Length: 172
Image 1 (cartoon, rainbow, N blue to C red):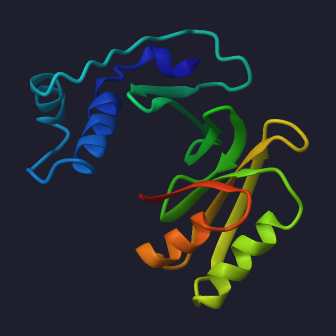
Image 2 (image 1 turned 135 degrees about the horizontal axis):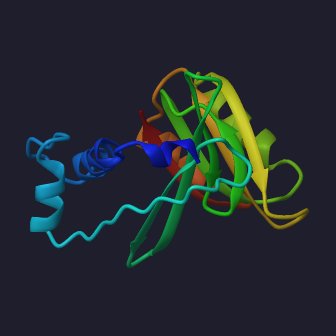
């Protein structure tokens, strides 16, 4: 889409910096992140496609690691409102900011209620929630924007709930 007219290297550097900061404690920033990534054998590339099917502009990030592949796509709504519109195989609409829980589940009755009850019992408020699923009764992704950061104990409690597959905490 329209983003193909611009230099995307700053976006690449910001993504690499964010990823590396979550794994390394050394001083990672947008300037040194591409060099640190190469020094550590992390391969990355940029490609541009002028046609974005459903959006004026769409930025897609794909990663591959031993545990599998991940995909995140985002766009701007209007001129200033960023949105995540795809996470892995799920179509979503989520604002990329704050404290976010990504919870992969089986699509079954009561799963969302159990998650909400568990967080509520710990005094953690859900400020916003999105849900995407691959098909009825299949797998689903629950995206929760929280007003406070859950402890490791709370994350483990959520993972132990019936039909919950994985729980990931993201802080932006």
